[in-house]
Image (cartoon, rainbow, N blue to C red; front, side, top):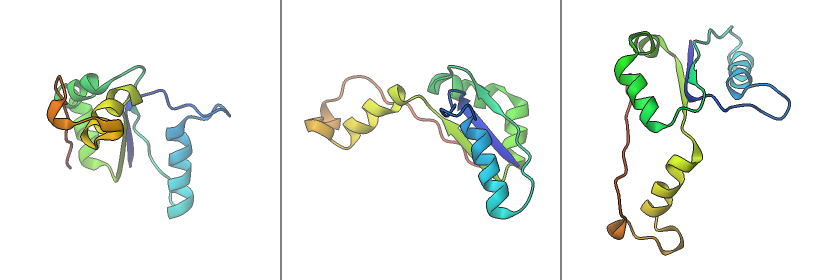
Length: 107
């Protein structure tokens, strides 16, 4: 079973959603039908993703059964923290202002 979660802005120019394309790739690669339980939410950011993990019992049940899990967090939410962490363009993690929050999901 495949469980996509996070932001639902996953459309390709041809109109297919990235999660549908990915499910098709899994089916082709492994030669088996893929059941998808879609937990994406339009416009969801990292905070909403964490809230969903904490409060959506059906999602947690699906994650336990999942063989493949993907999650999407909008670029604007991870770009600056990652660039700061790696020192991109002289950014220094030791002088960063604010907090970097992360959520971890393990099954």
